[in-house]
Amino acid sequence: MKFLRNISYKKNIAYLFSCAIFFMVTSCEEDLTNNKGKNNKNFASQIINNANIIQRDSGFVTMRAKAPIIEKYELIDSPYTVARKGIDILFFDKKKPKTPGTIKAKYAKFYDYKQFYEARGDVRITTNENDRFAMQTVFWDQRKKRIYTRDTVYVTMKDGSTLIGAHGMTAKDDFSEYVFYQNSGDFTTDKLSENQK
Image (cartoon, rainbow, N blue to C red):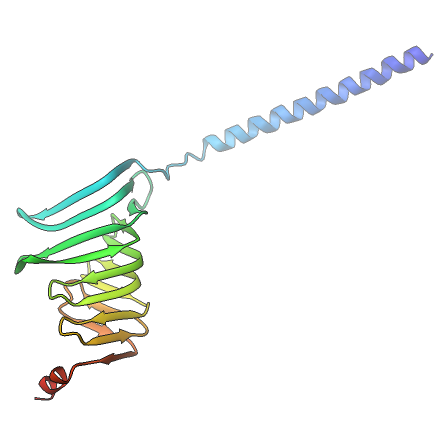
């Protein structure tokens, strides 16, 4: 009698163990079929180390960009290019080709279809007029030819006068015009007397 009890007990354990294995296998199969439908395409299709990029317009060099690494994400709905370890850009004006402007940042991203740039982390811009802008983030809408930020902007003009835009600025992308929000500054006497004439 005891022998029969042991056999039926072992059969019950074997049955429960086989049921557990069956459920584990079917749940694994379901997970695999679910994952097949979610093809992850958000990975870099191109990686450029020690990038040195030159952009031309009708033979004229309009921009030179250097970055430790540039990654292009082209297989997704909104393709973009990113420089995670910083970027250093020279941009040239046909009127003043010998004095390029510069943009430096710790991080930069470009959205291909929107033609929209963003730069973050100790952003430094020097215009070809030698005016210097410092901020933490800046955005450039290339289609609208506008640059803007909502961060505090610190500006040092070529004559040494300074200006602070406490709530950001908007500007034409060639910096021929710009507007600061809640600004304050320190201008030289010569500059003020010229403006009063």
